[in-house]
Amino acid sequence: VGTSVSLVATDGGTGVKTIYYSTDGANFQAYSEPVTFDSPGIHVVYALAEDNAANRSGLSSCKIVVMQRLPRKLGHRLARAAASRKRP
Image 1 (cartoon, rainbow, N blue to C red):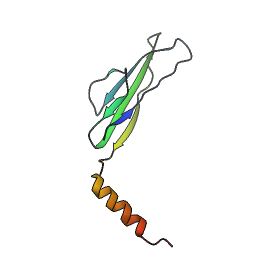
Image 2: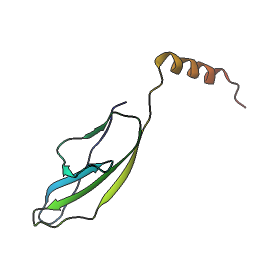
Image 3: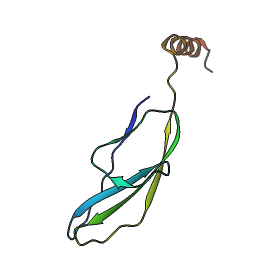
C-alpha cells in the first residue's frame, strides 16, 4: 500500500510561511514532508497555508483512495484470465 501525497502552496506577495494539514479529521499540524497513507480506504486531507504577513488561505480538501494490493499469485491469475478473453 503506502500512497504518498505532497502539498504545495504559492504566494506572490510575502511568500508562504507554513502549510498546515489534517488527515481524516485529526488535529492540524505543520507540513514538512509528504503525507503517507498505509491503510486501504478513503482518506481526506485538509490543508491551508499561512504567508509571511500572517494571512491564511481558505481551507482546501482532497479525497485519497488507497487500494489494497492483490496477492501476487492472484494478480497473475487475473491478468492471465483477462488476456485469454476474446475481444470483439
